[in-house]
Length: 106
Ligand code: FAD
Image (cartoon, rainbow, N blue to C red; front, side, top):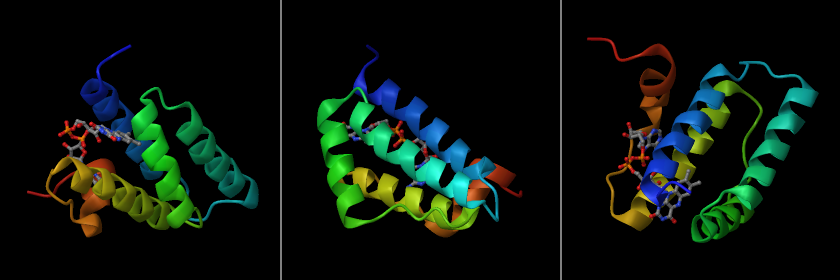
């Protein structure tokens, strides 16, 4: 399997990209699909210590799947929790769409 860092970078790209393409106004079935995906993901992620910590985070902070921005901010918070654990800088979650969806304006 790929190392934990390569796996992590690729996985965050996938997860934040799912947030970026999630609807602003998701249907009930889209909301339940996303919730199921996150829960199954947390059981199947092939870095077991990572998966264990992520599952306990899910127990404390229920995924918010009511809209794109709610989910994107929730995911940003989950990513920041891992950043904190690893001693990496906190990401400003008000900027998640610029990073993952619309691109930085400059
Ligand atoms: P990454 O953390 O991979 O981030 C990639 C890019 O995302 C960054 O360059 C930045 O542009 C952007 N970004 C950073 N923070 C945020 C944020 N909060 N919101 C939105 N965008 C952001 N590694 C371990 O060693 N131990 C663990 O327990 C562990 N648990 C993990 C759990 C999960 C669910 C995942 C997906 C990964 C986990 N990892 C873990 C891997 C770790 O999070 C990093 O992916 C890895 O260390 C590589 O880090 P990086 O510095 O390249 O940037």
